Image (cartoon, rainbow, N blue to C red):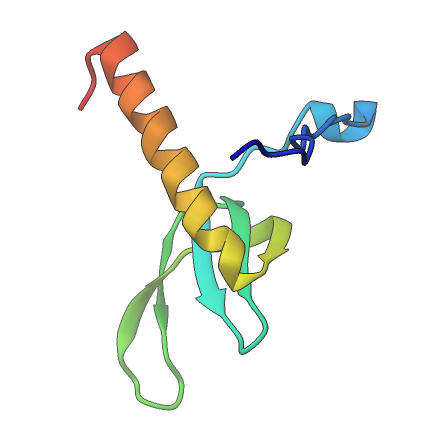
Length: 98
């Protein structure tokens, strides 16, 4: 059986502003009914000991600022996971870091 459908090829472009990227040293992943949200953040100041006024308990406060929020549909999470796994394996092979 011959497939007469042409293959899809994404032609990706990126603006100069986005091309440089954003530095992030923290990530948070959460979901809603409609999809998954990836928040990338940067720690803005050193962690400090703080006190919770309602409970009186001490905790370490880590001030962060979200630098990018990405929303993806559930169907894309599997593709993202596969791509991350492939890139991590390639990185480990190239650098020897595991």
